[in-house]
Length: 182
Image (cartoon, rainbow, N blue to C red; front, side, top):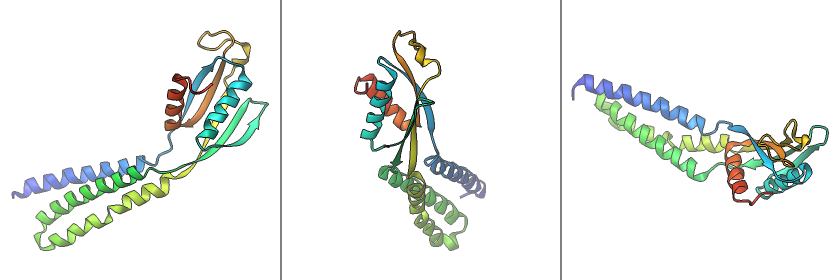
């Protein structure tokens, strides 16, 4: 094979390895967001209903601050076994590709480079170690919510701000839309 082609493939493979590294790193990144909902009932009822919803999702009540109308809950977010295996498989394929390119460049050490595939479970292990952490959910009455008019123009509704992990907010929004919360 022409050396130019081999070095081009090596360059592209290195770029893919860099992309994989950042993909694995991003899998453990904190993704806290805020969602604002308009509840059709009184503020206290809405806060209690949302607190019960999150307690049903394995969060526990941490604090209630009446001065700021804030409820804080804490829970352990467990890492996904599927994602750990998936990241390990991606790393194995990437290491195999890298090893094949290196073996074509340096044929005398070909079998040594195949040993790079052995480090691929490290990707799943790193994900597993970093993704499992405690997350906090904060429920708060939005500023101006006590005037009886929400930002959506609904008289008598309560506007709540929920700060939590993006996946929890997506699940909450789906349950809210189906009427399973509040």
